[in-house]
Image 1 (cartoon, rainbow, N blue to C red):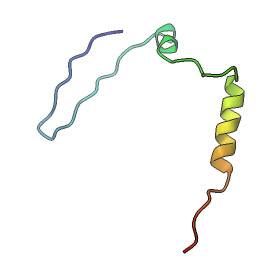
Image 2: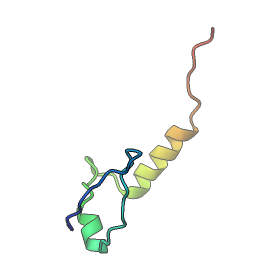
Image 3: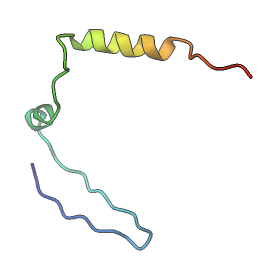
Image 4: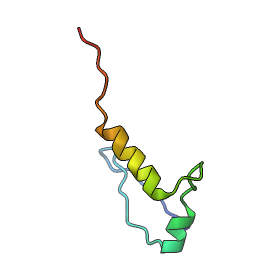
Length: 59
């Protein structure tokens, strides 16, 4: 992974420059899912969770 130097601007902002990663480097930096589900299952679960109505307390 390439090294980088961080600086802070007068407004306490940190400028970020783009880093170049190969597909192999990017893939290697992502931890695998903790279970044996494939990507399609994870996507479906996330969509189902987002689509489900949120419970809210009535006042």
